[in-house]
Length: 381
Image 1 (cartoon, rainbow, N blue to C red):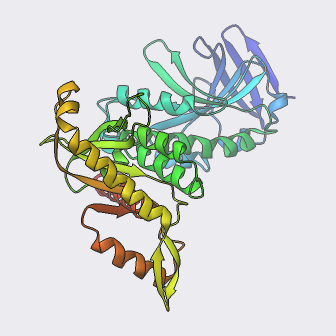
Image 2 (cartoon, one colour):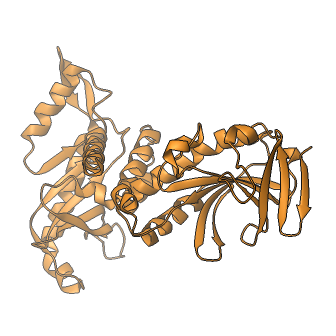
Image 3 (cartoon, rainbow, N blue to C red):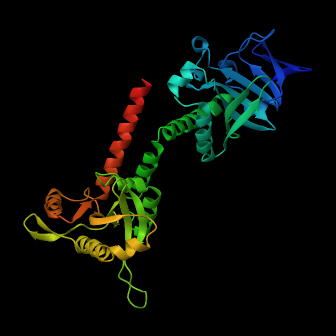
């Protein structure tokens, strides 16, 4: 057990024959022991507390280790990166947690160089990331002169302070990385690529349709011109007298500058695009692919024929001047070289429909993400 003596607002703790003085802190609602020399205290090092048994730490005791003094910072506290300026190991109401303190001096040159965001934006996105983490929260502790922010990671399973720190550090780094990526707009690329990597074998067209509604900017990468989502599950005509059998196109995109529309139909990554071998190393095109092409051309024909009626009833202006047709279907990665050759020869001869495979589309997403990451690193250095 730890030896300590409480004297009014102070608590004297004996660690390895060194007297450490903590003072009652209103924000922490307990005794705060700082590793910087304070009053009669000689301060302490992380190595003096790292093997303390958490179960033996008195309730409402808090040990603060700062890493803002670079030359004096010891391992593993030196692994904390800006804007983390310190860590507090807290035992409060019988719960143990590791609290990482953030420095938010908006006039700090290092902050400006490292983060490039005013702290209000950083805090807002930090909260979003923390809300997605288990047993993590962002605390505001109000001091006499300032408000301090702490990323608090709860841990009632570790045996020692050092064990708790080594568990908390990777989670802290994940939070800070995700926050930084989100502020740079890269998180949406990461999420999209994660979905792709986890759903390459997903043959449910409705799930892919819903994904592209949420990430409709991805389908915009199919165009060389600035096209944005205009309609999804769009009615393109064809109903009979009983108001049935109408045709629904997956997506209609519109040129953001000229208002001309483009038609985009999706299948799944698992849709076959190559059929049986016709002759030596020459392959036919799958029935699913040819059927999808004719389906898309049929949609185009109906839109062209019913343009004036649809345009009159539409609240948004658009043009239908020989609209571009794009079909997203299948993957190239599971084809052998001769199959790829047959597919590419067929695709390159099509004039009315452009075929893009899923792996081609997401490779483009990956390239954009890598470019953004590269530019981010260049700017920060």
